[in-house]
Length: 172
Ligand SMILES: CC(C)(COP(=O)(O)OP(=O)(O)OC[C@H]1O[C@@H](n2cnc3c(N)ncnc32)[C@H](O)[C@@H]1OP(=O)(O)O)[C@@H](O)C(=O)NCCC(=O)NCCS
Image (cartoon, rainbow, N blue to C red):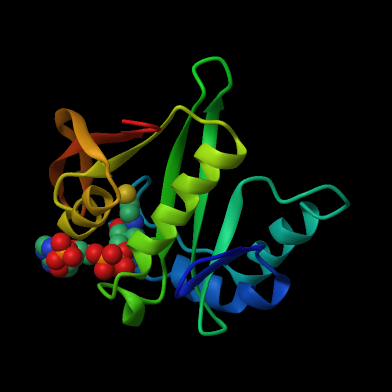
């Protein structure tokens, strides 16, 4: 649906679920993505969740990330505030073989541009763990700046970490 030089953002399909199931059960990917402690997830549960969400309409602002016809991860805009015209951004490249090749920053750039152009957003922001230097560098390359840091705010992989708030403004 959204085509960049190397990355396509499109709807998640049922055929993607076996790979998504692998990504969601990869502890390294789950820890890097932040959020809750890693939890197991069966393919059956994932398929049931996917099927229960079907039934007309659209998929919202969640996208599968595809490179050379391969599904490698997901990204989304969420928590829209329609008064302030801001939304949060999340991304996980679940296939580690595709990390650190610039695909993440291209997907983020496409998603931010989509938010500004099509949803008339004024700001896109996100939360990232302080130790996630790879993500922070990719976000900086897309124009995000650090706006705040909650010290030792999250417990991840057996240690406290800072929670960094980053944001990018339209027409900054
Ligand atoms: C975060 C993520 C989207 C970034 O996408 P990516 O395609 O891997 O990243 P890019 O190739 O665009 O950029 C990675 C940057 O980190 C740097 N980097 C890579 N490994 C690093 C490390 N261990 N320490 C510090 N920097 C590192 C790279 O050199 C590059 O920076 P540079 O271009 O300024 O040199 C992707 O790695 C991912 O999904 N990771 C797992 C989930 C996750 O962390 N999600 C984000 C949660 S907020």
